[in-house]
Amino acid sequence: MMIEELAKGFQITVEGFVYDSEISFTVIADTNNFSGSQKIDNFSVPSKLDHKIQEKIKATAKKDIKAVGLNNSFFNCEYWIGDDITLIEING
Image 1 (tube, rainbow, N blue to C red):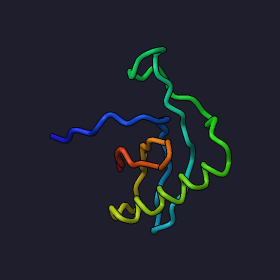
Image 2 (cartoon, rainbow, N blue to C red):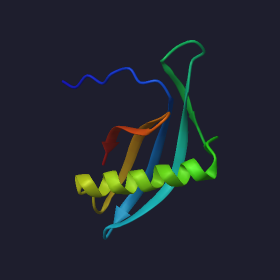
Image 3 (spheres, helix red, strand yellow):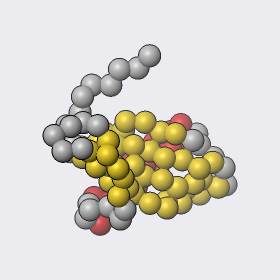
């Protein structure tokens, strides 16, 4: 069992695929919660985040995907966006 601490920030999901070690991104989706709740209501695209932070997120995702050794697979990476870009999980 893994318990993740309650993070404060904006949650996003980065999706894409890796083929022959080449990482391609398809979407960055914003996670929208029910008003006054931590429960997820829906996901929206395109992301509301500015281009500069999206490029930082992609660079972080590339590093994280390489670190876990994903190849020839679809993926999604979830992050908290606050003062830092904090990895929540990677799914292959």
